[in-house]
Image (cartoon, rainbow, N blue to C red):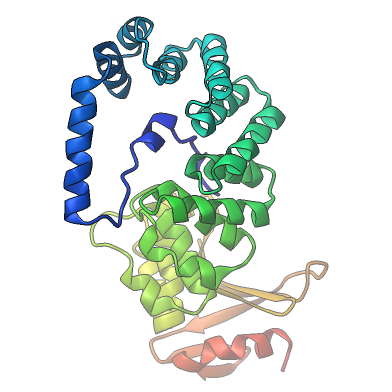
Length: 338
């Protein structure tokens, strides 16, 4: 359901700005930084800058000449960026021994282990990172991703939440948290993250609309759909929301706008659906134009089909008519034969 998660780059974590400072404090910090730049080892300053620019080969050569204690760490980053993971891991180990950038060095050793397929060692290093720096966003994100792959959604939720707290602008952490929540049927909690998600990315919007459907928030969910061209998943989900809000006649009208290529494989378009206890029901418009209600009392029971007649004023089933705004609530009773 969720697109494959990526691993945060360690360099980006080093660039997080600290908040909550006064203007005077920020100015003092800038002055101190300028002073440090003027007095620092020029090879280190140049090499560090090149690492940030991802000019790794050039950076590694320059940093190798620097006597600055931090140069080893940035040289390791350069080697890692060049694909020389064993050499990089060796230098990260030296950094840990020297007490230089310990948490970040452990983090990158973990990434290298993961890239080599040693997931257990990678996870152990990430836990070591958190022992040193409990709020480390990258380590939390990594452990969340591993937990998600193992379908351990409770652990994924915990780590995604911590990653998002540490880096509120990290959209991937909010997205991961959303999917971890809805995978545990925590739909209300997932719905609360709607402002944190990139609705233009992947299937985020379609899945958020599905959550809105499950919560009975059809009007709010429809309001999230932007104008313009929509993905097929959003088009299909929009129909169900319209049925919830406006009734089957409006949903049929919307379904009739769909390209035939979108429904011809399945042979039908879903108009509405619901769950009550063990009962699952589905209203569909079939390729032959018939509108059918399918009732499934339990996972073991065979589905029971009823043909519906739908118009602007109501729905008729088994020679009994229901007003448009009453039919949906009546479906569980219809399915149970009441």
